[in-house]
Length: 357
Image (cartoon, rainbow, N blue to C red):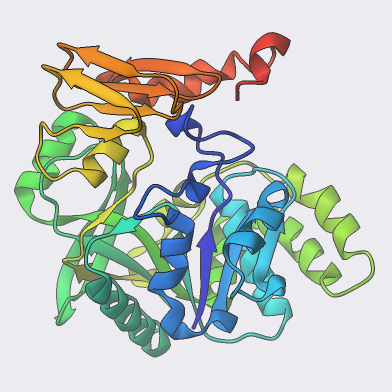
């Protein structure tokens, strides 16, 4: 099986720790390692030659530096940020152009996994299912702990065998009240975000559900390995519709085109500052503190100070993210951390502020 790890995001939701020049997947905050390095380590048993990393062209050199064991040709550069549907499709046609036949795993560079053995067992199980069912995409779902309406949900059907179920439908970020009903029904699973499919079937899904995107991908595929490859990719890829894999493919898949693999593995996507706090602390009201920091009567907060010669002090705060870097200080309550990305859009057209992105 070929494993593709996607690491092209700019990580604006974790600003100012994450910057366009050095996004979150490269930050070494997890026992001295980055989430990108951890993502590769988890699947190294498949062989480094079978692991591919897709990232923006701007991050290719940095990715190679972080992952010296991955063959350089397996680091795929995306010429523009077009979201995951174009990125996944681009990598599928690249592999197909090299003559690869068989299952492909779609994984992410910014996830944390609690039980790595269970994670690996799940991947191997998904590979087995895909080999036996090359005409289906495999969704990996986990029993929900609560009505989390910030995730995608998978409605599963009849049980086929141990941990394998028929697929009914998909619901991404359902409204809060609807989400509560889904949770209570016990007929839905959290979507872990991991997808497995035969490469030819994956391409078929693009042809069926995103024909315009597929046409552009075919033009790119025909150029791969030829002298004009870079020119063609640079011209076509940035013009592909900017759309998520969930919206482009996953939500359109029909019941007979998918299976659901149920897993108990714990995973976390530390995609926001507060999610990072939750991922790295044990108790609910525990603080995540890094750097030269002193606190009093402070609970449930993330406090990071990157300036060694400056003291960052807090008194009487709860549920707040405080981040101090060499050029930016951010203070935001946990309920507002999701607004950081929108807040930063105003920086793009301001010459004085753009340098802080």
